[in-house]
Length: 121
Image (cartoon, rainbow, N blue to C red; front, side):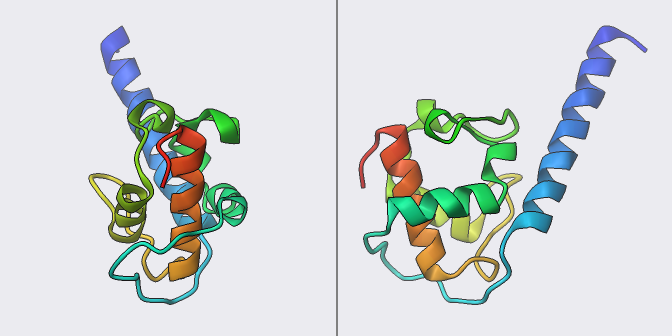
């Protein structure tokens, strides 16, 4: 097996592990996602970020995470509305967390990521 095939196999394994960790560590609670993003609690969002396994996929310096499967949040600098939409509805390989997280948890993690990445709300 060549080096590029090994690298591809390793990347696929890391990706699959990230999905498994994210799906098994996300809190299970049902709530509708709000139509607009209300202000959240960054302090509470930090706990959601950790408990939902976000760091397994995403790099975020403030959280001490170095995930490589999802976007580097420090570089992307998403605002709270963008984070809320992606967390609730999923995007690309990221599964939706609407139904796994409450609307408040989604707002909180969105506020935390936006603040920690330096994008503001």
